[in-house]
Image (cartoon, rainbow, N blue to C red; front, side):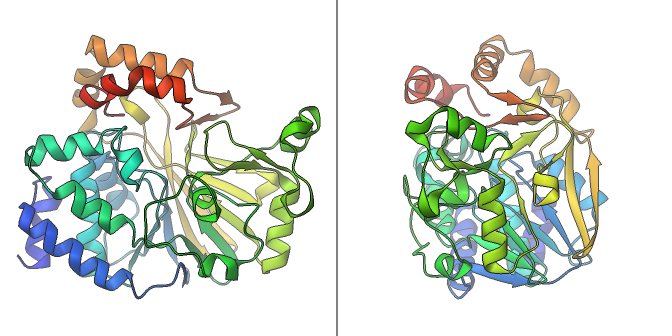
Length: 360
């Protein structure tokens, strides 16, 4: 099928045939393998945070931010899991990337992973939509291995899904990471997609000296997510100074107002999935960068098409119970609710439930 015909179907929310998905993934892998771990782009560009399978909200983004190819887009990762339409979401982005390669760029998030997608919904969704013998999940997770890790805008703005790493002091060190593989449990690649900024990092570190790192790792702490680190202002300032960067844009954490600013603007989180998990009631945003110093947070709420769906989802007593218990384990600070904070015991407790009911 031609790309324009694929787009016509995908914009309607229709699924593509399995054989077409295989061909599209192969073509995009051919394109991405030529790209560096760190890509360079220029403004104007619109930055999009986590989408998590909320397909109708992504269509809303193209309405308020402008359609491709009229608008340049940088997506910061986490396209799948938790939402009901991860297949539709990632496939539309794949075809848009093939159709307009210089107009849209896709970074890898921590959910673009075989291990994570088997627990948080994408694997089950692929089986439900393409049958038990479907290879769609394999085609797409193999493609995830080729997604780039970071982006630099106007030679001054560093963009990544998660955050910084004690194993990375310079951007050149990111460029030599072997990214063509499953996200490892630890190391620089894992940190880039899992880590989070923490305003009170230094204070907490001094109170818990067992997890306080020294030397090049100063002010990094082991993350409560079980992967990556939390990091404070001094880490950010050192990284920006060493690499001649001005600030960092990232995603990875739900923000009630759609975005959250850390360290007086040195780090900003962009979150683009409104009413996350069909019950959070949070706003979402896209960051419209007109130049390196001229930008606008375009804040929006859920797409109208989602409201009836959301009512149906949250009326399911089993699903609602799992969601409620999930948020009891969330750590809430200010306007941010950290996602993906699951202990090993918690994951074991709900592993079988999530594979059947827990699509969040």
